[in-house]
Amino acid sequence: MTTQTGAAQRLAEVLAIVLGTDGVPLRLKAWDGSEAGPAGAPVIEFRSRRALRRMLWSPGQLGLSRAYVAGDIDAPGDVFASFAALSSTGKFAEPGPFRRPTVPELATILKNAALLGALGPNPARPPEEAKPVRAGRRHTRKRDAAAISHHYDVGNDFYSLVLGPSMVYSCAVWDDERTGLEAAQDAKIDLVCRKLGLQPGMRVLDVGCGWGSFALHAARDFGVEVVGVTLSGEQAAMAGKRVAEAGLTDRVAIRVQDYRDVDDGPFDAISSIGMSEHVGREQMPAYVARLHGLLRPGGRLLNHAISWNAGPTAPDPDSFIPRYVFPDGEMLGLAEMVGALERGGLEVLDVEALRRHYALTLRAWVQNLEEHWSEAVELAGAGRARVWRLYMAASALGFESGITGVNQILVQRPGGAEPPLRRTAWV
Image (cartoon, rainbow, N blue to C red; front, side, top):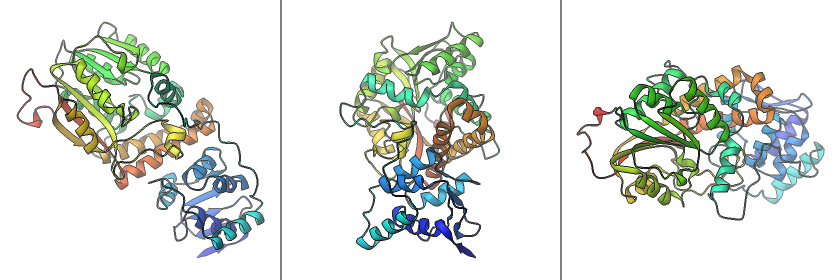
């Protein structure tokens, strides 16, 4: 049974054009209490007319994201079901240019928006939004440091709520859905250590070391010396504290340093887990060359990175992720990444796709956030908490649909000992 009364019906007519929701199983609830759409369908609640005004000024993903972050709309109930319904319109799954409405459609939009009292000036963007930089060279040291700070310097306590005790902010490796987040993250780090062939006394570089979880595991369980570098001051402070508490200061050094400035190689192995997404397509050859130069002959590099499975594409600076989550971030396809590593003189030893694992990881993070919602809002603010909920839930759907993937690529600098004949030697 379908109920269509009040503001909700006019809202539905506008959104069918602006968001492409016509025929999508979605129930709309308007600020006047009216509802429209199939009973039992996922609900999107419009709390104010300002939400529609945002979408009229910025049709598509950006306006929708701004409305959600600002609290002008909400997704009560199952956030995954609500975002999945919106993703089916393409607004969160694969952002593209907004289709200009026909003249009759434009008349429908303006008529209903006027009757709803939604016409007016463009509302101020939420403060959580990073202003896009249209000019200047991307991925300078200064600009990269600012981009990393935007994402990672949200507060260690906030990240602790979301990530859990492991403090690992990358895809875990699950035996099955019942494994549990902490065990899955421990399994992922252990897998990386084994793929790198870590042995006591080796010297390891952890590029983008985060809160030090890989460095701690590698030093404690494999007896290696680790240098971890990050551009986030908050990450480095917590990582250094964890190292001291573990009594590993003689084997682990954490630095606030750009990987391009590391000059104390060679290293026996390098881990790069969830870092190369910040490098960008144009800088990838220089990234590979730098890490190649820091490896001893025969040394291994493991590059763990999210990939864009829908084909090569330039990031849309006006979509949700660049504006709110990863400024200047860029996902490469698997073929692009493998090609860059090989052109940089590194031999590919192993490639493992972990797409389904990241979907499980993100769902676990969303569960952590939901269970500690009030505390998360107190620590980071309602807007920032909503950014992370939207980002993680929508990303989980992207991995589940196959639009995005994540891959571990193990490579070796030529020279030194030959790798094992079978991959089972390290996995």
